[in-house]
Image (cartoon, rainbow, N blue to C red; front, side, top):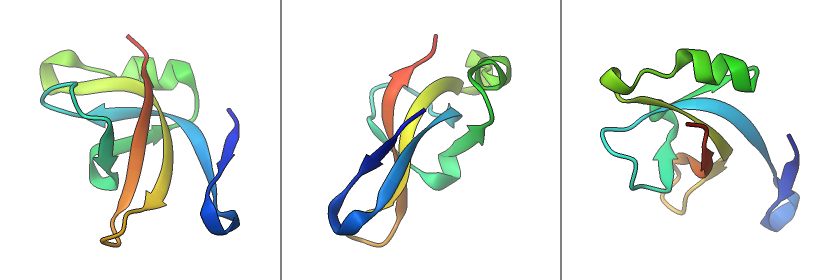
Length: 78
């Protein structure tokens, strides 16, 4: 995975994760909906459609203008 440089030299990394989402139409998620995993396989194994848990690649966390920590969807893994 690689890092992304944002304003003020902040480095935000791509990570494998499982996202809790009732639907898959959003592109950003608060940190309490994102469960970072060590590997792609771990993310895939932790996914569970019936529970609304979807494996993904995310970028983050970064701070929103409101001060929340957010992850941005890079790609769904399923």
